[in-house]
Length: 242
Image (cartoon, rainbow, N blue to C red):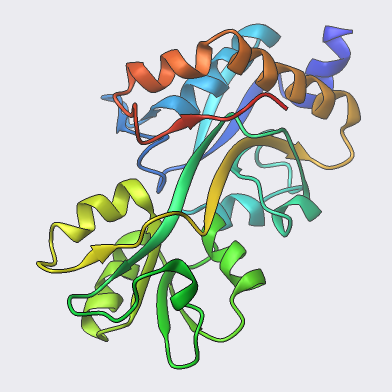
């Protein structure tokens, strides 16, 4: 049975794991060789260990680029946020951890609640094709989304264009708000980014194994220990069991 799963999940004999380098909570550093270090690489490493194969971590600048390469034979598993648009090509597990997404607003802003943001005339800076951007694309009806490539660029355009809101992951916004005296982070969350693992659609045995693996990693405490190990307690949360 395991041999059949390996054949689907690691056909080259090495598990090629796509890692989103822009997620600073899941990738918290690099080795001397430049390989990513963090909760996401740890999950990939444990999976490779269970399969009895080698591991190759394939680095991507953004999660959108990971999704673009789904089905091209470049990676075997992708560690990114599970979103319906991405799920058209990727068979995702349930989340192994989640991250709150909310807004930062400038000093003297009249926006005080999350629901205030989706109004005509409001411009929201956002990192293009991030999981929370995909959520905003489906749910924002009146405000305008100003998309740029990357988290740093979204902060820059928020400041340069004097936009009304900056969408982002709460842990990053906690850092950003310190750079803007008087700015505020709105209470609550407009979504929680569900960080998951996935493989290309059509690999039924592989997908089933992946889903069981993620549930075991949550139930056994592996995810919680990885969060503690990489010093992201309070910023990453272990997702509930599916």
